[in-house]
Every structure is written in structure tokens, then in C-alpha cells.
Image 1 (cartoon, helix red, strand yellow):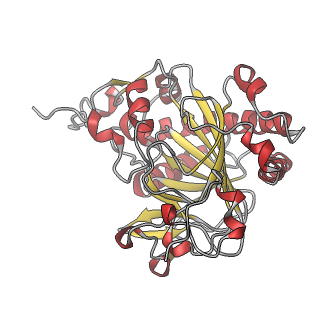
Image 2 (cartoon, helix red, strand yellow):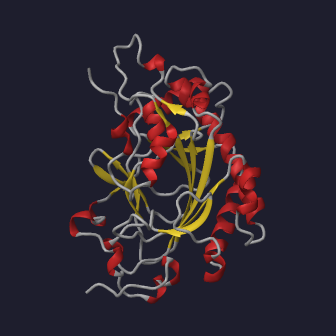
Image 3 (cartoon, one colour):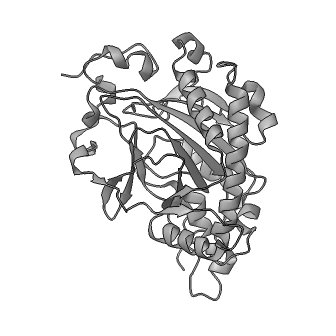
Length: 350
């Protein structure tokens, strides 16, 4: 029998007091994680060493990036230039944020997806018919000075540490965008230029232990609305990617990031690179923390396939050009779904 509904909006404020998943979180049998059927990653996830990206290893690293993006849509990176100290401070203060009293976290609670700093739960509470076992803090972080004043005041070091981390990750993202551009045979600055003035968001995802992890998700299968996403995880497994018609667990490796291609990169590359389906599952024993950095076009940008990937290669445009804001509104208008928003932006076949 399903547990009764809870009056607490955040999962972390009731998770430890329930022995069953409340009915609002229970997936239909056809849409459950089937955890026993998930494969282990082993060598499935490419690990790319970025050491020497701006030196003698550049050609080889770009070849590896091309292979990872065209074959998998995701890869892990090491020697990425974000210091271990910066990473550890970010994980520590993020965990401290979620361990604060309910009253402190709820200061930022909102179900309004247009707010640029907010704490919420599930994905889009206003649209989700079944809730997800996840609380999160989401914030905009570029340009930092435009948003830092609305970030949480507590923990007291949160703003400083988050600003340092966001700045370091943005520098990494810009290097990756150049390398991905080159891997497609484009000018190094092509993708960056297509993203307008750029936008960067972060989410701090908190997944409490769950009494019945086989009945629910932290986040169900979905594709990211980004150009690319750079994910920092703690050492608790939970991320899974869909590859060759099966779900594969991604085991965290210390001092690495997980990078995945998002919908906007799929468009710009004219589907040479595909946005990847991924999900988060939960467990009975340990809380899990993940911190994705989402890198987007600015809302005034117009997104479409690179002309160089259409003309002269016998490849018709898969997508029409569209204002990014149209895609963005469509993405947040719904619950998180396996189906991509991109179908609405396909080029008409003549």
C-alpha cells in the first residue's frame, strides 16, 4: 500500500521518517528503473585526459572528443584545469546548504521556473504528475555580478565558493566549446559565437536515501536543453546513461567531470553529435549530491545547424533556425520527458 501524502514540500524533510515511498512518487510498473537490468560502465564511458589540449596533444585530444561526441554523446574528463581544492569546497558547501534547517532552505523555495535563484523539488512541481525523489537549488551564474546578490546568504561561504567554482568551470566550458568546434571541422570560435552572449546555470541536486528506490527516480530519463552540461558528482553512484538500448551506470571517478552533449549542440552539429538520454536513480543507504553546470545560448540567440555542416556535404538541414527562447519556453512548459523538445524544430522535408 502506498504511503500517505506528505505535507512537507521538500523530500529531504520527510525522507528519513517514511518506510514507504509516498504514492505521489510511485512510478507505474512500466516506467520503473528496473535496477537489476542496468549495466555497469567499466569501459563504456570514454575518459579523456585534457592535459596538453593547448599543446602537443591537441590533435589527438580533439580526435578523442570527436569519437566520444559522435559515438556516445558523453565523456569524462581529467586534468581539466579546475583545482581539486575548488571542487572539494564546492561539494562541501553544497552539502552544508542541504543540511541546514528546513526554515533556512525554504527561504528560497519557489515553484516558479522563471525565477533565477530558487529551491524546489522534483523537476517542475507545477507540471509533474508523478514527483521525483530530488530536492534542488538552481541558480543563474553568468554574468556572476548580475545574480550573486540573490544567491543564498547561508552557509556564509556559499557565495564566494560558488562564484569561484562557476568561474573556473566556465573557463573549462569555453575550452571545451573550442575543441568541440574544431572536432566538427568548424572554426574554433564558431559554437561560442552561435550562443549569443551565453548563459550559465548551476543546479545543486540533493537525493536523500529512499526506502524503495526501485519504485521512483531521482530524475527520470531526459535530455538536457543545453549546448553542453558539465557534471560534478560526489562519490555515490546514481547517474545512468542510455547507450545501445540499455541503461548503463556511471561510476564517479575522483577529480573528473562528466560532460554530455545537449539539445542545442545536436542542432548546431546538424545531428553529427546527439543529445544523450540520462537519468538519476536513488538508493536506500546514502544521500547523493550532484552539481551540473548547464551552458546555454543567451535568450536572444538564434540556433540552427552550422552552414558548413549542410552545404557541400550532401547533408540537408535537420533543423530550421529558431530563437532559443522559443525552445526554452517549451522545455519548461512541461514535465521532464524522454521525448526531446527538438521535434518541434525539425526542418520541413521538401
